[in-house]
Length: 68
Image (cartoon, rainbow, N blue to C red; front, side, top):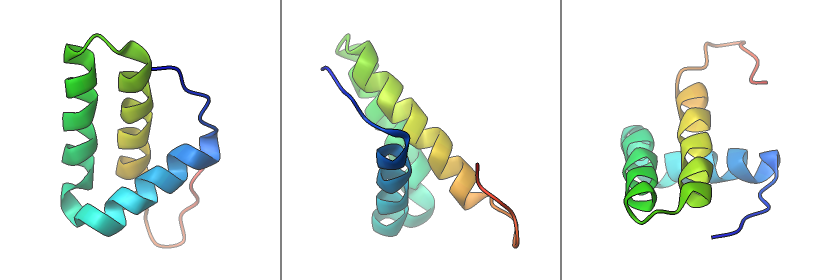
């Protein structure tokens, strides 16, 4: 899988997964990353790992906090 995802795309995917899966969004992203790792798709796995990290950041944002 070849990808050219921009940082904004990763944040948008993270937000969409939170909207769709709520508290389970991070686990969903991790499962997808592991599936792609098992399928020997390091690029796809890296994208899902990035999405998982953004989900974590969004779900653990303190009130008034800034996401970088």
